[in-house]
Amino acid sequence: MTNLSPLSVPYRAAQRSVSIVFALAFIAFSGGTALGGFVGALGGAALLGVVVLTIGGYELAYYRRFEYELTPDTLDIRSGVFSRRNREIPYRRIQNVDISRNVAQRLFGLAAVNLETAGGGETEGSLRFVTYEEARRIQKEVARLKRGDTEADASEPDQELLFELNPRELAIVGALSFDMRLPGLVFVFGSSIFPVVTSFVDVPIPTSGVVAATLGLVGFVLLVTAVSWATGFVSAVVNYYGFRLTRVGDELQYERGLLQRYNGSIPIDKLQTLTVEDNPLKRRFGYATLLVETAGYAPGAESSNGSGAAGRGSEAAIPLARRDRVYSLVEELEGVSKPTFERPPSRIRRRYAVRYSLALGAVTLALYGANTLLPQQIPWYLPLVLVPVAAVAGVYQWRHRGHALADDTFVTRNGFWKREIRFVPYYRVQTVIETRTIFQRRWRVSTVTADTAGSLSLVGGDAKAVDIEATAASDLRETLNDRLRASLVARREERRRARQAALGVGATDDPTLDDDRPTDSPTESADTDDSFIWGDAVVGPDEKDESSVEENSESDEEGLRDADPDSHSESDADR
Image (cartoon, rainbow, N blue to C red):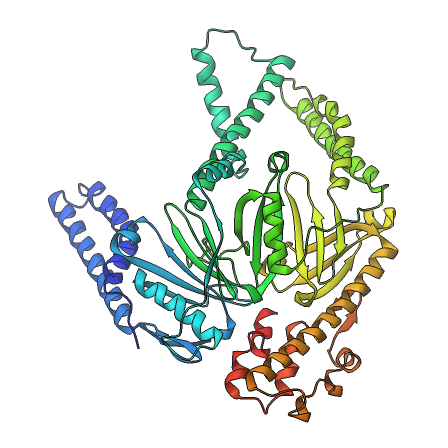
């Protein structure tokens, strides 16, 4: 068993102590007079010393009680000061092995290692902290053991640099990035700073009437745009500084970050969805972003527990590149080129225009109501000027929606300001759902959703064919279900052939493994894949079907069965 780095003790103690020490110091010295002057301050200092010693003692005990070991099949972790916890994480269930280092950790040579597994709500295992060299060793060893290499000195797969972000491209990433999370802060700041600015400006600025309201609205929009752009620029530069994407065997490995440095691995066979993302600025200059999603949480972003797991479920494989370069990588990873999309019915353009017009009407009514309650008159009718814009917006929303059925992939496209093109392999589909709102029923359209095991599906990030004809939606649902079954049959056949090749058994050497076994025929596989239709949902077996191969091949060697990356135990976690 191996312990954490000895330097993790003072570092973790300092992390825990900073906020507590500042709070107690403030109480001690601000309340020193009430507690008796010098005696009160001395007592506060003594209390601070006791707290620091207690935290240091706990961290020392944590260090001595935390052990981990890389066994041939699992990563074992034993931890806990007051209550012990023993975990065995099979390598085949590990989705991502991520290394993160902030500025202080890089100064002391420390790193945090986070292990993400399929379907987990939080990080499965976290080593905080080990040396950076040890973190890299763990990352490489887990990858080697997942591949089934039993020799510790086995040569590493060849590395292929897929993408590297140079300084010019990094600047473009920042220039084309916007962060719209600060409008409220900008509003408060602008409303408080506006009177101060007007007091120093000699040019008379109207303070009431239509002109004042118009100037205020324009100024607020410009301020939000400027702050959002500046925030997006800084965030993009800090996040994607030094970005590199490398293909090592059957994994994608990346590194990025300025203040917080990340190194992570993404297994290619665990990819659930590829997403090409852009906005009007990126489309204007011919750029796009490629996001990848696995069944585990995305590497790099912070979670609520501070473990480094991400709640959004995806990670940028390419932060920004020419659109053709992005699609070439999609074709390399999933074997699908840029498809031709089928848009919703043309009458849906009117639906989108009506929807935007109703939204403007609601804003107008709200302003009119506020106008009757407030002593100062406001131009409540201004939103009506944007009614012609609503018609144009409806056309653009319709134009940027669609879906396509490639040979092995379901592709959807949605959004104008943030357009997302999602590529989902058929064998990754868990559930096909057809839904219709009361408004969609009036327009005789439906939405077909292809749900996967990726974490984005928890927050509505699935591939969706929106507002298609109701009759076409039923056909699309059945087609996706059929292609799901066919892809699972083909995938099982491919696994079986790979298992034969690993055992050195030919099709004619062992009748039990012959290609013409009835148990692998498409008809029987489709009858026994446990798919079912319930209401508008078609539930596909996905990984569960593949596990049936494991049950039918008990004569195979145990090591080969355990090395299957999509075994039954993993499918339960994926779900």
